[in-house]
Amino acid sequence: MLNKAIRAARGTHLVFIDGDCIPSTHFLTDHWNERRERKVILGRRAEMSQRWSEELTPEKIRDGSFERLGWKELLESFRGEMFRFEDGIRISSPLLRTLMRRKRGGMLGSNFSAAREDLVAVNGFDELYDGPGCGEDTDIEYRLSLIGVTGLLIRNLAIQFHLHHPRTGTSQKSWDRFHLTVKNTDQPQCAHGIRKQDESVAVRHS
Image (spheres, rainbow, N blue to C red):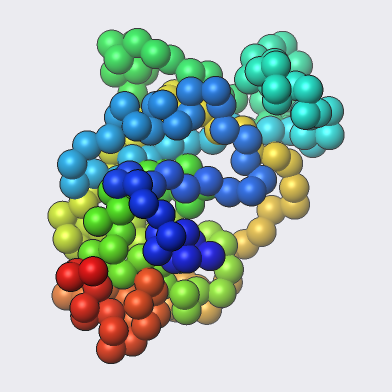
């Protein structure tokens, strides 16, 4: 479906989210304003508690109240019922974000954006992965780096709230597939992506 989305898209810059994540009011604006040439924009997300997720309503989304984190969320963070509370706080000041800069993280498939032409250049997402946690982020981030497209972390911008659900793991098959990709360091394009197999060579000229 991700490759179908790239094929159907007409915009120059594409933003990717997951169906179990709620984007904040400024989500698309932040991705657009922070875009850079030859960069993939890396957003983060707050991992919300079961209580917060069960209490979420369409009304809270419409009026924007779901974005306002308070004492309940902070206490849940201390108790380990919510994770990355700090990533749910939008900081508009570039100076303050710089002062608070923390360790860089990798790509999250639920929150990133990239130029469409860069995604096309690596033939999109490798469809040989069989589940979440690697192919839609780790793999394509690596292959983008092979053509000089590197990550730009925008922590505390493009805020996203991830609904609580039982955690899913990455299959061994997916990790094996990724390790195979890393061995082929001269092959940024996947064979089963936007174009399939021998067609992938022509994708740069699409």
